[in-house]
Length: 210
Image (cartoon, rainbow, N blue to C red; front, side, top):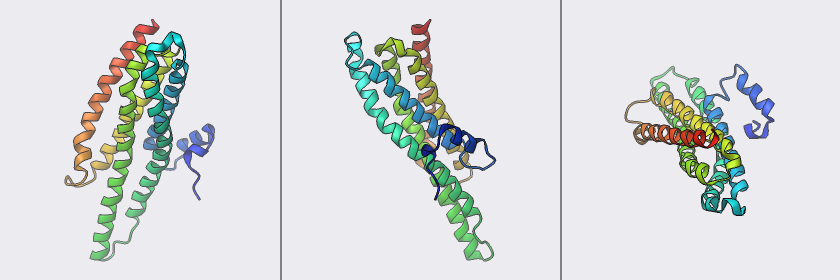
């Protein structure tokens, strides 16, 4: 039985990532990065909430913590799902293809599993964007002693979003144009919004730390 990636030690996960095995790969790493971003956001929120000095940041801190708790859990699930989806794609390519019926069944299964392999990182990207949307206000209103941690959370969330979209695109590129239509439409929108928010956040963090 496969052990969930989040149940490994950090060193064990890095060893698995460094191995020649195709899984875990970039999609799993992106999901793990999202989990780290969420964890840092929770820390900054907790350092802000209930401290009178940062009262103006309580509302955004509470929002950020509530969102990040769910994202941290789901990111771990997506890390496993990403690896599992790629394994399913590889298994579909191993299906028999001697007869016309076998060939047709194999192609349909390849398309189905590849679409799932695009949908999983798409979910990672969407969650990363949700998190990034809250970080500029958390940076401006939260505990300024943790402003650098907001910056690191933003960098990790941005990497998670952009990295996940790499995996979305590579899977969609091997599918017929009639599959994954909504993902094809939304992915560039998510990417551009991620870029804009990331730049805004980095500007805020740099101004407050220099």
